[in-house]
Structure formats: structure tokens, C-alpha cells
Amino acid sequence: MSATVDVDNPTPSQRAAAIEQLRDKLSDEVNSYCSDLDIWRFSVARQLDTEKAAVMINAWYEWRKQANVDDLAVAQPDNENPVPCAVRGYGAVADANVTAGIGVDDAQLRLTRTLGGGCWHKRDRDGRPVYIERAGRHIIKDIPKTSSTSGLIEFHVLLQEFLTRTLLPECSQLAEETVWQQVVVIDLAGVSLVALSHIPALNMLREMLARDQMLYPERMYRTYVVNAPPVFITAWKMIRSWLDPRVISKIQILGKDHAELLDQIPAHNLPSFLGGSCKCSHMPGGCVPSVPLGNYPDLPRSAYAHLRHQVQISYTEPRHSFVCETMPVGNGPTPMSSPLMGYAGWLGIKRDSPRNSAPTSPAPMRTQHVFVRFSTDRGRGVVVEVMWQPLGSDSLDDGTLVYPEALFEPQRAPVLLELEAPNRAGQLVVNWRVANFDEGQAPFPRPEEAQIPIQLEYSVDTEDELLTAFSLPPIKRS
Image 1 (cartoon, one colour):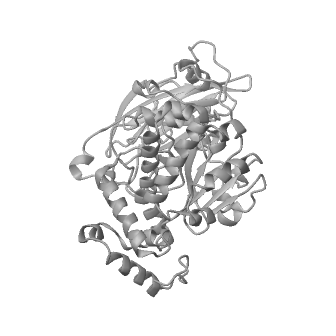
Image 2 (tube, rainbow, N blue to C red):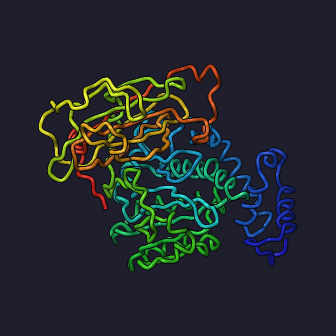
Image 3 (cartoon, helix red, strand yellow):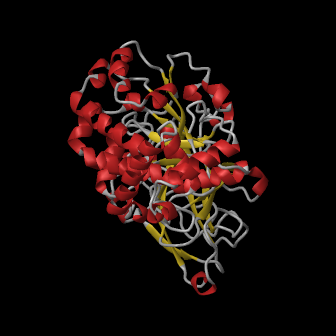
């Protein structure tokens, strides 16, 4: 095909011709496996050179079959697989952080603790998913110690498959056109010269980039590298030598002035630390949780293994509530260490515990923050709402909405929520209910499945209690 074709803006006939020419070079087996979009991506990656594109796509097909890529446990609406990294603002899966659930292996947790924090965070102005990586917070020297190159690549493949199978179809549905690429933001704030010159980690990066270009070509629309310090220029000269010229053309290096991001991503979809207005305050860690940055509790697997309370909810008995008292101490309220139990909740169900019972727990700790850990063994997800009411009040009008209704999917992996209660004596009411059929995208249960109770397990702790129990450092909130 003529090299004069603009691969970024082809006419329909040019695109169709390129796809047909490449399909003529492929076996029936490969052709039946590939969509027209797959064919087009590989054609573009080789600048419509049919011979080179055929070699590339055949190698891709063989790799997928030999590595059983199609059998990977990718989180989708119709399964209970955990998300591979933090997610904000999509419908196919509920907002989530990576937690130590049964389906999350130790290798992934080790990577989460050394990588600076990554999150698929909402969409750009044209409906593409946005992936944000706090690369400047990577603990570079520990990455080769905690993961092999093959382990890092396997993790990256899982991320790419989640993008391809879960996020892009949702974005396409919302945009009412095919969305097949993502926007990437790499934040280098905090990076050091030592990190940029760590040879073992750079070798791992080089191998991962090589695989990415060969196996997932044209999945990136644009990459913005922001908060790039002057020392990055030296590293960039080396890194760009590993990249295809077309990939390089899509990368923009920006310093501390990265207002251009707002041309690509609307302010309400861009984290405040990147110049937007979004804070995702409903999730621990905000928009992009980071273990190295310490902006949320990095709980071990044992923190979710034996939760304090176990109850059953179902589609016929869909609600459960937990109530504890708060009391003003120092700069904030403190739930009792042994909260009052037996309340039926905020939703008008009968209460059978005394309303003004005095606290009997040890001296309260000084904190404003309360953490809720919970998981379920099945279901379409649960909706959580948290209210606070002054102690002794019988009027709902006196209450405060601490945490508005939000859908979570604890059947995938345990959920950790952070709450902030008013600095007054009162009652904190945590409500769970089974997700309605119009909430979330998980398929409806069959009638016989709907009769099976859902096991809800949870614990409610003050921040001090949680950090002390698992020997964690203080949380660094921005």
C-alpha cells in the first residue's frame, strides 16, 4: 500500500484495503482469531508494510496461544476476579484498590509495594481511559529484588488485558464508537538521579517496553511524562533508543508546568496533584493510592483473613447495619473499641439497643478517622452508606451523611474504606445492602442462585487501632 496514507486519519477505503492485504498474508487460523481492529493495529505499527506486519501478528498469535493469555483471570463484569491495580470511575468494575484477597498473589502484592502507584482514572475528553503512574515514587532499587523480569512482564500483560477486555469495551459503549487506545500520564515527581541510573531496573524496563511494543501495538494514544526533572533528559536519551519512532512521536515530556493535560483530560477527571479538581476522597489513597508515598494503609493478608463480624444478607433480606458511638476527644471523635451491637440501622428498621448507653470501652484514642474492612463470598456487589447522628437524637434531620451510597465489589477482593466522623458525641451508622439489579454491570443471578445467602464479613476500627494492630506507619494525607 502507498506510504502516503495517513495512518492516523485513513479513509474507510484505505483502512479496509490495508486490512484485506494483511489478511491475505495470514492463515485461516490466525485470521479467524483476529478482529479487523487487531489487523489494523499491527498494520499501523509497521507503517502498512504487509510483510513486516504479518511476521509481527503471527508471533503475537503464537505467544498468546503458548502463554494461554486468553485464560488469564481478568476482572470483568461477569466474573469475580480482582482488579490488577487501582480503578476509579468506571462501571464495568466498581472503584477499588488492590487488597490482599484470595485471588491476588504475593508477587502482585510485592510489586504494589515497590511501584509508586498506578490507577486507571476516568476518561479523557474523547472517552479514552486514562492510566496514571506515579513513577517518581517507585522504590527502584527494590523492584529487581522483589520481582523478576518475567514477573514484571506478566503483571504488565494482566494490566493490558484488563484494559483491552474490560475498560475499552465500556468506553466504546459510552462513546458510541470504537475506543481502542488509552492515554497514559507518567508522574515523575520525587524521582532521583540514583533511581534513573539503576541499571538492573532499567534493564527490566527495556525488556518490558520491547514486549509491549511487539504484543500490544497502538494501544497508546498519547503519553504525557510530567514533573520531569532536568536529570531525566539523560535517562530519556537512553530510553528513547529502545522505542519505535512512532511510539516516540506520541510521548510528550513536560516539566512542572503541565497545563496541557487539561487540554486532553477535563479537570473533573484529572487528579488535583496534576492540576485538575478530582480528589477521589471516597477512596483511601485518593485518586492514585501509593504504598511508597504512604497515602493509605498497606494492610497485610492477615488483616482480611479473620474479620470480626460475620452476618448473612440476601436478596430477600438485603440490609445490615453496624452502629458504634463516637465521642469528642482532642482533635476528633473516637468510636468505642467495643462498639454497641444490635442496632438495625439508619433505614428505619427497629433498633433494639439502648440509645444512650454509656461507653464501656477503655480510654478512647485521638483520631478523626475510622476504617471499615469488609468482604463477601458472592453476589453482584454491595452498596455502602454511612451516617452520623448526635447521641440521644431521635430525628433523622439531625443526622449527617458521612459517606454517600457507593457500590463496591467485595466478592472480588476485600474492601477498605476510610471514614471521617464529626467531632461530637454521636452514633456512626454503617449500612450495607445488596446491590439492586440496576446497579453495576454484573449479570443477574439465576433464581436458584438468588436464594443462596451472601456471607458478609467486616471489622470497624479507629485509625490508631488499625495501624497499631498491624504495625503500620502513620498515613500521609495530602
